[in-house]
Amino acid sequence: MPTAVVAGGSIAGLAGALALSRAGYRVVVLERAPRPPQWSIAEAAGRWARPTAPQGLHSHTLTSLGVKVLKARAPQVLDGARAAAAPLLDLTGAMPASVTDRTAQPGDDELVALGCRRSSLELLLHRAVSDTPGVSVRHDTQVAGIELAASERRVRAVRTTAGTRIPADVVLDATGRRALSRTWLREAGVPLAANWSSPSGLAGYTRFYRLKTRTRPGPLTRGNAVGGIYSHYAGVLHPGDNDTFSIALCVLPGDRALHGLGTRAGFTAAARATPGLLPWLEPDASEPISPVHALTSPPNTLWGSAGPLQVPVAGLFQLGDAACVTNPLFGRGMSLALSHAFALGDLLARQPEVDLVQRQAVARMTQEHFLPWYAQSVASDRIRIARWKAAVQHTPDPTSVRPRDAIPTFEEMAGAAQYDATVWRGLTRMLMSLNTPAEIFDDAFLTRVRQADRTAPTPAPHLPPDRTELLRRVTAAEGVLV
Image 1: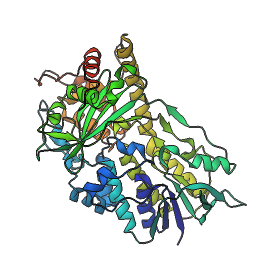
Image 2: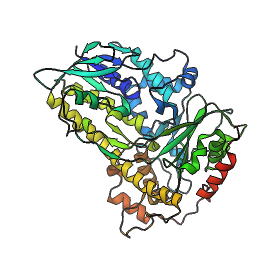
Image 3: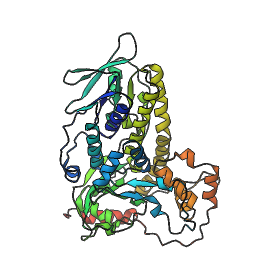
Image 4: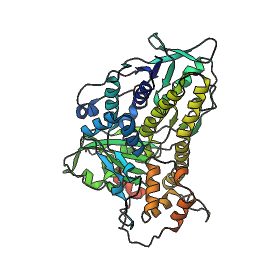
């Protein structure tokens, strides 16, 4: 039986371990963090310290793609999440009231998201992997480098930082945004392909809460969330497991005027001013269960080492964020990692010979898997960054003037979705990662966006505060304990 070593035991690495075990591999997962606690999910998720995964302290969501993958490939994990009081969220319930044709359509059963904290999902995956025959997890262990066969570009073993040599037929880099296989390749004398990179332009603040009531204080206006991405900031609430929810507030990196978002009072003031969030934050509705966590988002990056332009090394593959990082504001990371892991397992099962042909097939699959989402994230972030900079600098929005025949913007699509069920479903399927933008935004779809009947009455929108008002509220609240 061939051996696969997985470097990294977080979401991508654990999913990769499950996938490769089913492809006929004996799997060894090497994770640099200590073993997770064996408490219940409810206890462990809130108390599990993860210094090796700081992004675990922030809001996460499992989109419809992730739910679809778990249903088909790891139903025990989804069942465990449901048993841990993680709600399945029917996104069709967020179809705008102004849509007149509400007839159910094929594919609506896929429009489901999962409200689950990242730490809870990771614990459930860890327990599923630990229960899988032929898979072992070694904690407090980190890969230092790879050993290649002398006569060919093929993995033979990994070396740990403790000096241990572990023979391997296949090595998976699941080290997340660090993408350590780039260092391993460089040290092995293998040239690195160039990366594609573009700024995400995002600094985030997150806080977690626990509900005091069994009923939701307000509607999930985005299907799996409340809030939105506005003209100068973003504020989004995601429900979690065990009656928890998280709120993420995002601004431009270096926005010193809003440094008060990092304080409990400043964060609360901004959250309460964000459309749809106030009912969730009333004293009889919830209580905070964490401090405010701050984290700057890394740039959108499609790692060249994972793609077809990289000088291939047989048996070395990148998973999840080690292959591609996209702006976390879109909430796709966990779902794309799950989907990628099982796609890799399927490919290795079809092409079991560990050679350069197999490696290039994986590289092509990886690029096809991530490139549409990288491109969409880059394009959306460029527009958002320009708008947010204009708001901060009090200059005209440079994106407001567009050619008459330009492709409709996301805002125009969202506006049309308020009236047209087909547009709403297409946009939702893209946002939930079920279909790529190219699969949805064809000529027929864009025509419907342009021709949508916008005369039907809609409720008056709850507008977010402008920048001046947001600054006033945050500044006034600083220094107050909440």
